Image: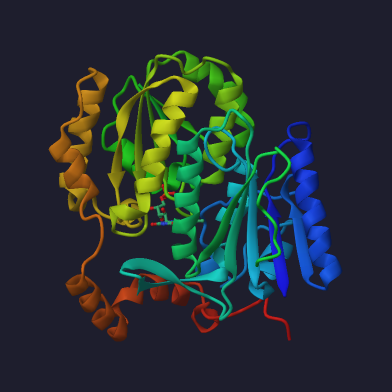
Length: 183
Length: 213
Ligand SMILES: Cc1cc2nc3c(=O)[nH]c(=O)nc-3n(C[C@H](O)[C@H](O)[C@H](O)COP(=O)(O)O)c2cc1C
């Protein structure tokens, strides 16, 4: 099994213990023999999408910005599971994660299909990863924010022609239910 | 009134086209795609009491650079408190269902930043706006202008206009059926294919550069 983890946690100081817990969990997967591509996005040089659509219309499948997003695009097409990790920043996922999500579109085609009664793009590759979210929260985060983010990832799953298989909260209280074991 | 254009395409964007529909001489436009200017923009924001954000839907929400700007604004504690803020969001797909989560997010954002939310205007199917002759969108243009006139004088939005701009929430079976028929003829891909051909990239349109050999 292959797992790609996009960790969009954006702070060095805040709730570091939760991030460490996540990394320990990934270590367990590694030891089980699964391949984990772990991307700590805040340490990577990744530019914002320019909206140029070269990746659809000039160099199909390839982004014109050559930076540390490229490894993520490569991992995306191979992985069985794609895990989005973020803390809740201003009621939504971090800009650090959103920036990387915007730049996943080279892996889709410009062509549009009707999928589950809505318009969506065709995927470029045969393999579609199953989606998961791990949301790092603290006491300031309210229920409506978490609900919104869950609904958001359900939309993303539709957009990617995939499923949101798990959405779990890492709240730092110790005994959370966020093991990757049931992937 | 201050207009914050959140499109990564800046002046060449559909967002810029929409802004021109209601722009007045005394209004100011800032381009959020200019990341290094975000700090400077905070001072500009402080000077206005009516602010409109216009941005496209990117992977089901705001573009990353727009979220980064919101995060920057949040650090300047209280900067947005009491200001009147409206949003115009638009998408490539023609159904408004794609924009609902983002619309909900603006309510959360208004609580977090303390601004007075004057509703979100939703305009699906915007991709061609910047290429269309102005008269093709005259009706939309007039609706947006009326709504923005209401916003300028703190009148509630005319719900009828907001709903007309948002159009259908979802496609229906009949439209989907017609779409699949048209898809077979290639008509639905015309825009993409003519661009691909112009760029000499048509033969590479299904390329999979990241497939392992
Ligand atoms: C990276 C990227 C992601 C996009 N994601 C979506 C999407 O999820 N749903 C949608 O309807 N349109 C999506 N679009 C289409 C844009 O919303 C649409 O083209 C819009 O008209 C662009 O406006 P602008 O010129 O002001 O940037 C996306 C475009 C880009 C470049």
